Image 1 (cartoon, rainbow, N blue to C red):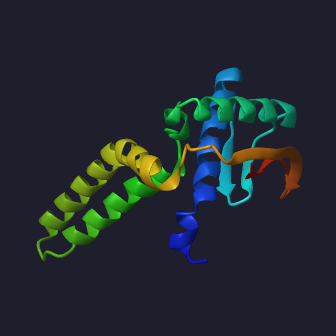
Image 2 (cartoon, helix red, strand yellow; image 1 turned 180 degrees about the horizontal axis):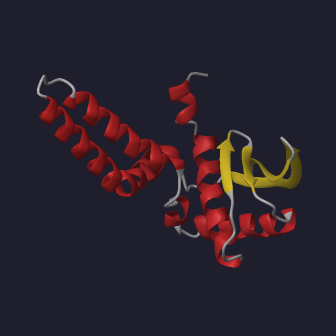
Image 3 (cartoon, rainbow, N blue to C red; image 1 turned 120 degrees about the horizontal axis):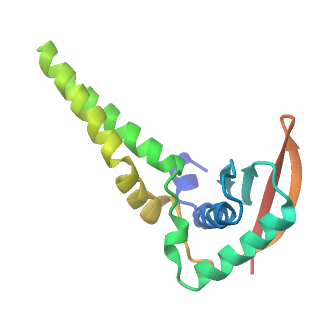
Amino acid sequence: MGFAAHLGSRRIRQNHALEHATMTILAGWIPGLAMSARSYTKGFTIFGDLDPAVVGHACTEALVRLRGGEDDLAIHPNCGTNFTVGTSVMMLGSLLALNTNNSRRQLAGMLASALTGAAASRRLGAFVQRHITTLPDMADLRVSHVRTRHMRGRRVVEVVTGTL
């Protein structure tokens, strides 16, 4: 499967939405919680010292709320998509700025690109999350199991999903 097909996979997008919703719920339950996560076709992994039972309860609530129409839970302000989109805007603008021989224009263009990318990253990132990288439609998704694993010497919680 190519990168573009992988990125647009229905299951990855659903898992990404469920990951965001679960993390939002966990953050509400446990203030100051430090965690990150990564979604893939069979579920997602949360990198953080968490009780799998608590994560399981958060996943269940996330599924119920997403199925109930709370689509905004699928959009997370700290998603890597925001960083990627902002960086892409900065890079594209900088490349365009380098098309002039005037060093002051190059510098001004690169500075404008950096400011634009930083300013637009959350709003444009949320748009990309909503339309490309997440899918809050949970009608056919279920949580199969939640388990603790050890990855590179760290304890992580893995959420495995399947179809109804």
